[in-house]
Image (cartoon, rainbow, N blue to C red; front, side, top):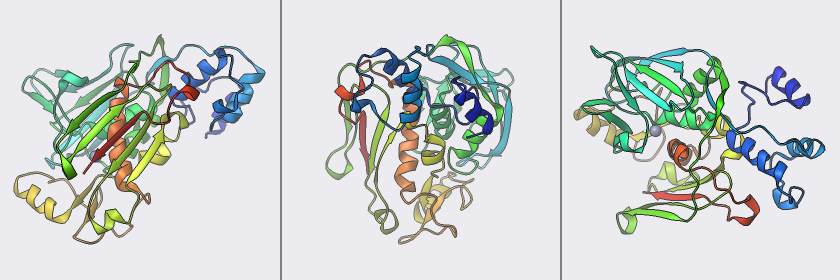
Length: 336
Ligand SMILES: [Zn+2]
């Protein structure tokens, strides 16, 4: 936490555009805590105890959750994981209700692709969005960073078909976005409220994948993977993460993409993974991790996968029911 942020919190103000800014779900939670009669019940006490005590002393209702964008523009240069192509990214502030909009600025006329569920056209090796024939691949690490930091509105100018892989995680994007600064806008955030469980399934037996959303006040993800590989087996393959914890940048963002040498060779023969290597992925042979420095988290594999799910947050994060009435898990998914 920056010194400035600590100070402004002591004065009881909401810190603005700082690394310490709480995740929007937390802020939302506090808003409700301020209003609900049962706010002192033990069921309400979580990791934000100290903030709550402050609220209890000062029962003023928090301002409505505001949309967020960048304070200034920021740029990054890197290579695409699959294309190996050099690409420049410029992240720019956008007005309220813009959402996140990619712009292919390398084309004769820039083409915009707004990120939403219908723009997603491929999710096999990476998440791809399209507008007609114009595509942007591998948006998921940047999207996860935006979700983790609660960014609603952003223009992403890009000079090639694939987002740069940088260090293979969302951490570089988190750093970029935080360095540019994050500001509140004069418009309330909008949420989709899950009112009843929703479940999708694909495949059967050991190949089954499923995801389920349950009503929940807040946003919490549980995720499980099943990779039958000695190096992955020796780590935790299940993780649960509460976005109200404000720990996204520390606990989740740094988890890297991973791959197996035999798949990498096959992918390369098909012109894929050309930009991939030990500096932007965890690479494993048949038994072990090949990266000299090992893993960033004991359970880095599953954390990378849950990180991928964070992009979906924009679609389904808040229900109106108070937390203590709800089961702990908002979403459970399994992928082998
Ligand atoms: Zn990934």
